[in-house]
Image (tube, one colour):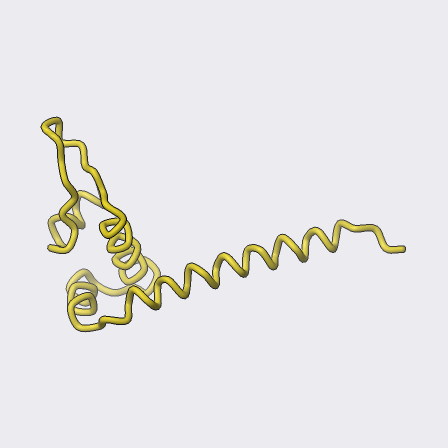
Length: 90
């Protein structure tokens, strides 16, 4: 329901639909959804603020990409730390 709502609010979200109404998202649509999610849910932007940020800030997608990479590295480091903690000392 949130994605359907955001489709109405953000003109950059226009997934293709078949005759049954099923949505088909392109990788670009997924990227845009991630950006919108980051702005609205994680950064606390209003929908109007997110729309403005999308049109005025060209580096948002780079920022989102960097955050995803850092979160992946963090998760890997946590796994490594846990595996080291599970290893008995000699």
